[in-house]
Amino acid sequence: MAFALDYPELEGLFEIAGGKFRLTVLLQRRVNELVAGSPRLVRVDEKHGKDFIYIAVQELKQGKIALAADNQTVEKTDEKKK
Image 1 (spheres, rainbow, N blue to C red):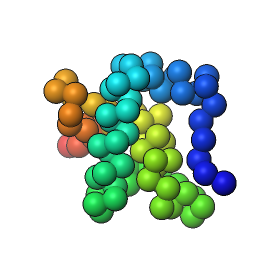
Image 2 (spheres, rainbow, N blue to C red):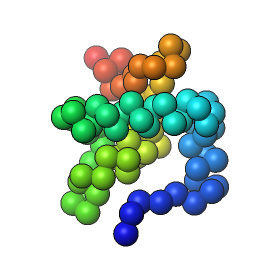
Image 3 (cartoon, rainbow, N blue to C red):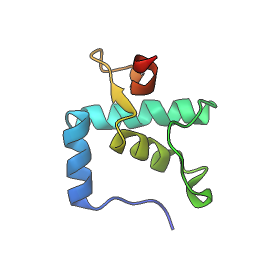
Image 4 (tube, helix red, strand yellow):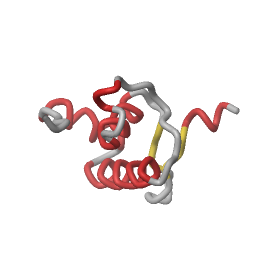
């Protein structure tokens, strides 16, 4: 079964990301990074190990990623702390 979000959860993600457009861009850019080999910022179970959309959503929910002010760059919050 594919990963799916219910509407209230999706609305919450819109709020976290700053809107539908920003959520879409953030997830698309982060999934591209993960596909290209970027390390995951969260732990996921084996079932979701290659589900890059699921991983990106979990990273967003846990506050590990955000879309930069330029609306194009994925910021990793862990990197800011270093």
